[in-house]
Length: 151
Image (tube, rainbow, N blue to C red; front, side):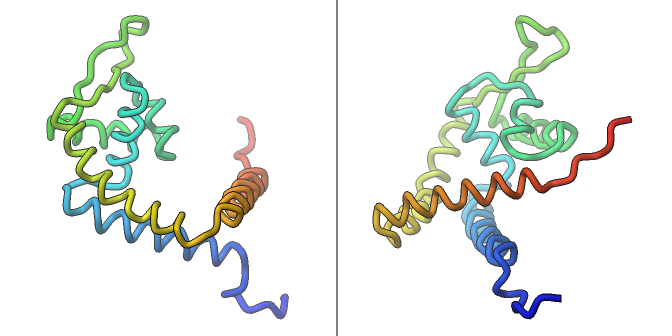
């Protein structure tokens, strides 16, 4: 075993940062009746409306089954509509409703405060370097993730 204390591990630091980020976002979004997955799906739809459940699942980092549940809840709250794809009859395409777009806009105004606070904490060079380092760390984490054996 290494003599490095566990709190000094990069993975531990990344996890703590992720937990702090998620804790902040979840607290803000709770006031709007949204989960992080719902918010991320709505943000994705706001940037390119008309996405399938599979596309949204990939964008949110969840399974298609989980996204189906999320989309059902969002549709029940009238945040999205879903209609059959013009090219694939079995695929449903989600779009934001006006109410969904309004709720997202209000929530975004609070969520973006943290982004600005983080950006302001670093010089422009530090910000660029941090982004590059995080991208490199993410790439390493993805590369090192075992893939299930082919059947």
